[in-house]
Image (cartoon, rainbow, N blue to C red; front, side):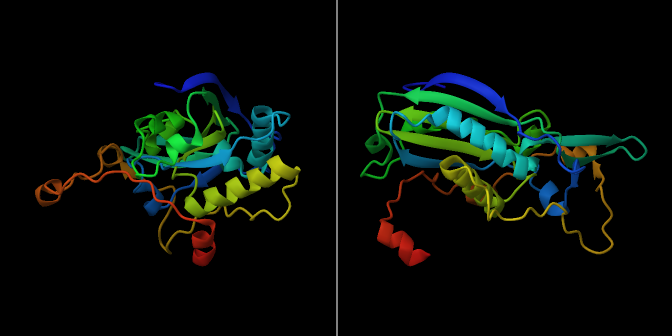
Length: 249
């Protein structure tokens, strides 16, 4: 944390029910493994501040625990197996119920208007609204596969999160967030999307996939000299009205 953002608490939220019907290991496809050294995606959601009688933090934590019962791979960890017979390593998602990280922070001097700035520039403090920065998917060996930071502001709430690409893609994460939202608001998880746990492998591809140790630790390729001469891109804020969104959907 830094600047106007103060960390209040950090905890691990585990699934309310640790029985995952014997599902403990999810093998990873070649595409999954190609993302090992890529940064974990980070996203953020901005909400108006709820009524004072709404127990925001306790409600979010308890509903997250319930949501993790359904989407239990998010509560797991990335696991690595050393194959001594051929000097390779293999990776899989271990659905061990270790839990997701939940951070509670405050930024009482900031308001929603400080984030949604009319000139479109991303404020410097926004990086402190997220639970981590610079984590790679391979860090799932020691870090949670999902982390959430809830930052209470003067007139709003910012929910920042990261997820590990070894456990889910963007569609799966939105399904998870939708289910979590339903549980938090109504206590019901009915109608949630069923989980697809078995990865699809091409015919003839055996798993777990063995990767040479040097390949598993190799960083992603750097931009070529031609690309490195391109001006550095800047983050920007774009505003879409409610009508714009409805027209897109």
